[in-house]
Image (cartoon, rainbow, N blue to C red; front, side):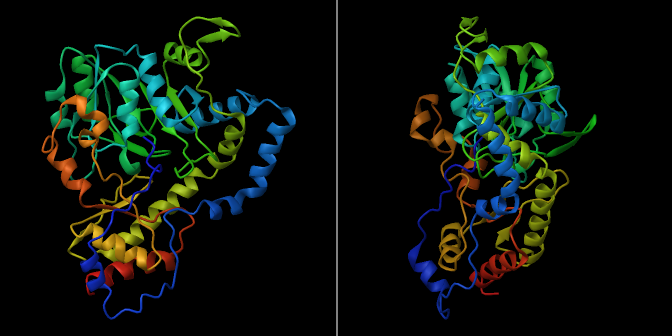
Length: 399
């Protein structure tokens, strides 16, 4: 799920925003971008340049040496036996489903509040997406609703580790095992996230049968273009995926299946190999920033902060507020960029009208879509910037 794609800020209620600004000069003291990729690059530019130069020197731009190195290291980092680089997070989900043999006539269940890529990946196989509502506190799939959505045609479930918090995999696994369903993790926002379950702590990417990651530039582990990866412990799935991503071939020009052109570029693998060494540190910084936000915003009764929990990697820090549009405009006027992930739920998108859902089908998802606001969060975020965001929000509420 490629959440960094399309940060959307809705038009505000102008009269309310103007009223909130009364008595203020409107002067922007501190700029706070939603994400700052330049700051991250400047800190590691020498290493990035060296790694990319090796690729340019080798001229192995497609499935080159750096791809193999990154796949090995990323599998080791996640704790999986295998990792395979592909063209994007969307393609990671799509090919994972294809490798499981999912196609026309099948159904795959996922949550209604995910980024559209999760649902599109199901559609790409010819299978039917089936949506369920989510838990209002965690924003993740509500397992109490999962079993009711299962039919004789259901073949898999895709729990989404939304915003960097792992879904309720213990409950989902119990249900999936009873019904013979595959579990495909959408870990596109959860690089390095840790789940505390029945078998102890395990990283996202090892909690189901197969998992998909996105390396969209704004992700916790981001490339300098599109990219994705699939992790699994299943050797048969891994061998299928190697063919599916590369025109269905194992040996060049000998095509075993109808495959795709979905390969991670070697230059992107070179970038990711450098960044992977810093991922745990960056995730710790994100968690520290989230804790500071929560502390500084704790006195605002009109605003609800996300739950802080171990293992959450805070790809996004998402608050809930009824006056979301007015607050977003107020922040923007003071140099603070915020986003909405996501303003229109999948079941209300014209693209999925054929699924037959209507307004009211998923009340929690619909309620959240009107209240959520993503505040700036990235490893290089400074305390003065966090304080500026918090002070501005407090001022919006007259505090």
